[in-house]
Length: 168
Image 1 (cartoon, one colour):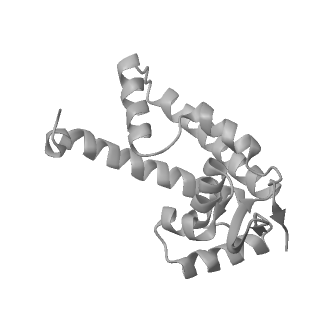
Image 2 (cartoon, helix red, strand yellow):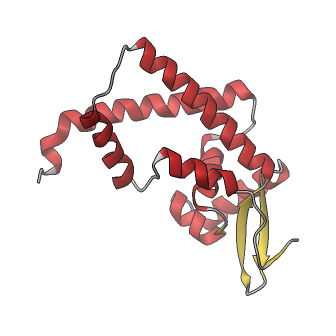
């Protein structure tokens, strides 16, 4: 087992990759004129990943104050990207879900990112070994993210109707 300091070079490389991925996401959102900030987009991605969530749980996941999430969702709701609702068996909690438009926005941005990443990999003339792919899979899993095929399965149903829901 390695200690955190033993992988400094890998951590620095992943940090640089992380910066490039954030820049790529920001470019995609700007190019689409989506009028969505990166934090708002992250909320949409979380809803696509995990499905409908209590607003308090999403605030915790995003590491923002509940009031910050409320303002963020006010904006996303005005843009028809999320909807708030109450479950019939849980009237005290406010739940959030993607609308079909919110799901579609996330899908379009993800597909554009995939297209750009494909071009970057081609330009870099990278041919990943199975060892490299396994490393990336382990990093994705350790970070709490889903493997790509599973993510797309969840995305597909992320705007489906929710049972036990009372819409405003």
